[in-house]
Length: 285
Image 1: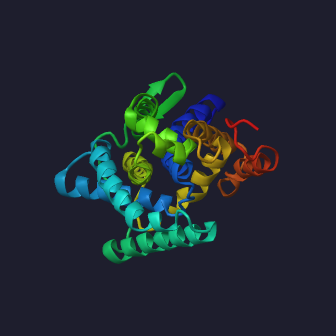
Image 2: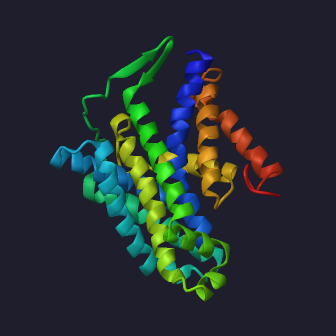
């Protein structure tokens, strides 16, 4: 694999990583809660998209929208019934709750769906596009384009809409937002639902090239936290940039190191950022 091919592959992977991790960053930025169950919502999104494909014949890329809406509703209910109760609690209580939620979702999926791996079969699964010496797999390209569209829609929502301004105001100063007439409890629920819905959407669009099982989230959880730490925890734009960095580093490292050490450079960069720039790449010191 040449360097240009690896760079392109890394950018496409990074776009997906960015969208998946944006939800985690959004939840922390607004609620101040590190959601250790975030990767399980990706797994939940993959299962919902799989069932929409298996039962209704809906392509996972098209199923991404109803999947995100379903998980948004689930997230909203979870926030209002569970997360809301620990917002003012010590961080340890928040960690225990989200770790417990992670275990419930994973083991609930294991009980409901079994431990077998499931995959979809779509017409473009083995197709691709040749650009000189560079090959672009169709499933990866379509997933990346979906990630770009979602990122643009999220940016427009946060920067142009009343809801986006209310979310940003709540994240910056909850008391000031209340004085301006914002129902921050409602915003907390919407932000949590949006955060986990975005991650579930990412799970749906990667389904054409990844199998789903109850433990599917485990292969993404460390990458998600690496992305948000690189971009600055709570920084949505930083999560997108961090996703691109992670994807490119991971892909280029595969040219030098064996598969077992593919993430070595990535985690060395992760440790260096924590040590010398803990606020992330885009946050001011």
